[in-house]
Image (cartoon, rainbow over all chains, first blue to last red; front, side):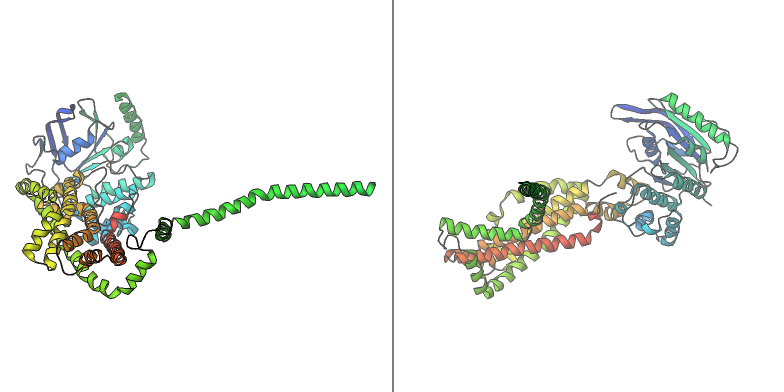
Length: 243
Length: 289
């Protein structure tokens, strides 16, 4: 079993077109647990995710892991859009990481995963032939197949219909059990279902505050829990106040 | 009097009925005319009828302006000459076709090689760019005599002329594509721990293939021009040679026949290459959802 380390972000600063997105920001991801990050759009959540992924070469390295081994090769990242290569079929896109590293391609596992995600008919299609929700599911399949201990996801379920989203949240939570996950989302209910920890990003420059929800059961949580629905209303009003 | 009144009433009724009938029918008839018109008029702009229009206008021009056939031969004369000189034209088409195809092949190879090396090595980029621009600033017409001097009257000089003309649009387009790989694709590859060569081979080159394809299409359209310029400057065979000869001997109908062959050669080549490119890059034809 992969040991998933905790991730620490210390003193992160990022400027974007004369605007300070965040300054001296500290944040951490608990080891082997899912952290959900809520916040208004345009606040810099995606930029923050990219910073953790090491995609912003402008900034000095501010991200460390608790076991001091660094992030290289231990991280999977699911961007919001434009992540599928248009010249590869869905199956080849899903095993892209293995193609790029010239490893053995796990086609059978990839097919199983696509089957679970309801993309059976799309295996040999090109991304342009798929709807937005199907493309998102294919990206999800790729991230899950990478089998990395740390997973960063940028609104992975935003383009899906309610039923599929509900099903895939459960599937993702089970597949990423004991992984260190950071999930960016707009939806408080999604955060409450999937997160061991919930944080809200707000302000300019942005700050991140953890919310202590003390929900007893472990994710993926059932929606029957009345406490969860109460928290949804609280989170919504919190987000509204920030606006 | 009564029967007369009845008769008159009947008559006026009939007229009224007829009027109603005509009024009812008139727009219908118009509609039918309209429908017929809408059915027929696209035929005038059909891809097959445009050459027919062209030929008809050509014929009419000669009739109206009374042009002598040493200025502009009639379409029929050109067709006649085409059939008459079929053997000659066919034997001269082969070398030209070979020049075009070899020139295109070497142009693509050279263009791709230059673009790739310029993309990979910064210093080479700085060194080659002015050289490339200079090569295009010099007209091919000016260099062709030199090439004939160095490589003789044979096919080699023409292939070099054609290659020289065709590699630039390919290099230019492909290099553009290689420089504009979307940031998001490169980010994904970076996180997946891909090395530089795999990024080039699996991400940057495939992402630039649509640009390469448009470069090749452009080069294909230019290819016959390169070969014929080469033949004009100095040769003993080929369609360009035949064109020059026919012009010198005032065989204007033969000249037109050769032009027709060059025209169809160019069109056929373009559609062949276009079809092959579309088959090779099927994803470029898909509209994104």
